[in-house]
Length: 115
Image (cartoon, rainbow, N blue to C red; front, side):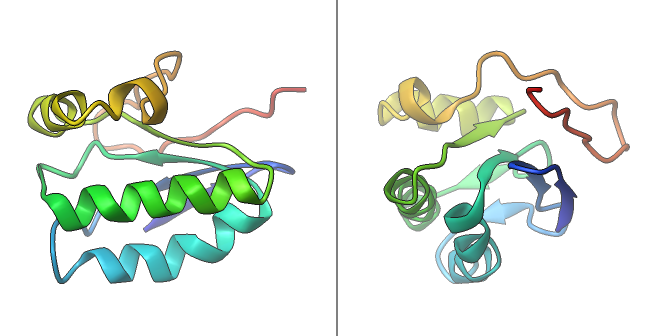
């Protein structure tokens, strides 16, 4: 997972996670859970081609944990199939960062502080 940290904001990219499915969601929760408690996180899903109910539950868990800690959590650069599924379950309205700038192909995403 690639991490880009700023003072209060982080962009994370699970490049070695092509599927966010049952059996793989716990690794994402283990890595990202502590981070969403400390700062705002945007999860770059550019390399995730498939998601199932367990993956959706993991995203909801991360969102809820971040919000309880006073931070934001969003996803960006979802593949067309993942974006379609997030839309079908209504999560596009709360999880998808619509103002995010796509990362250049093959390069890590860097984020800029709001200040």
